[in-house]
Image 1 (spheres, rainbow, N blue to C red):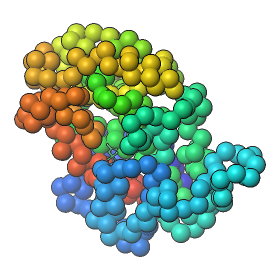
Image 2: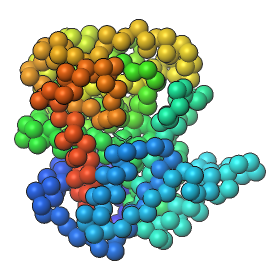
Image 3: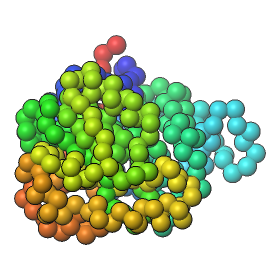
Image 4: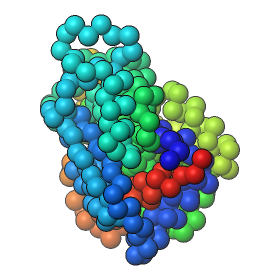
Length: 342
Ligand code: CP
C-alpha cells in the first residue's frame, strides 16, 4: 500500500478531494465498500465525540476493525527529535510509530495542546505549537498513512465533511459566498478548525469572507496559503472586522470561535479582550442579512453564546447533516488511502 498522509488536507489536490467527496456521497447512498480485516488505530490525546465515533462507525460499516487508544492507555510519548528522555516520557514516538504501523493499516491521531475541557489553556507558545511536531514526527516514522484528527494547526477531516455538506446542499459550490465568522465563547478555543475551514473552501473556489474582531487574526501562514489557494481555484478571499457587512448576501454562514493570537498565552488578557465581542453571536437578525444562508458549525456548540437557539433550531441549520457527513467523508478518505496504488 502506498503511504500518503492526510495532515493539512493540502497533500491532496482539489480534484482528489472532490474524488473523495464523490465517493463519500456514493457511500451515503448505499454503495459501501468492504474492507474486512483492515485495521485503523485511532489515538486520542484529547477528548472527542464526533471524530471518534465517526471514524469507529465508518470503519465498522466497511467491515474493518478499529483500535482506540487514549493518552492514558499508552506510555507517555516523547515527540521531540533528539530529546534526552530522563524525565516523564517513557517511549519515543519514533519507535511507537513504527511498532503501531506493524499492527494496523491506517493510523489517526488527535493531539492538540489547545483542546482541553479545563476552564483555561495551559501556558503555551504559538510559534512552537504551530510546528505540529507531534503529528509531523509520527508521520515521519509511521510506515502506514497517518490521518490528522485535529492538531494545533489543522482539522482537515472537519473541513472535508463541511465541503461534502455544502456540495450536497448546492451541487456546485464554486463562487458561493462562504462566510467564516468568529463567534463568542467563554474559553479560548483552538485555531485548527477555522484554519481548515478557511483553506478548504478556498481550494474549492468559493468566495470566502473571513470575519473576526480586532486581534483575532488567524495564523499568517494559513492566510497566505488560503490566498494562494483562492487564486489558483478562481475563488476569492476577503478579510473584514465588520461582521454585518460580511454576512450580506452570504450563502453559507460558518460560525466558529477561536483564541486571540495577539494575547496567546496571556489568558487573562485574552479573556478580557474576547469578552468585549459577545455581540458577535449569530442570531436571526444577523441571518436576515444573508442570501437565506445555511448555518453550519462543527460542534460542540455553546447555545445562546455562539449562536441563538432560534438559528440553531431553524430549517436553515444543517449542523446534524454536517456532523453525520464526518462519517461518510472519513469512510471515503480511509477507502481512498487503503486503495491507493503506487
Ligand atoms: N467537530 C469535532 O471535531 O467534534 P469532536 O471534538 O467531538 O470530535
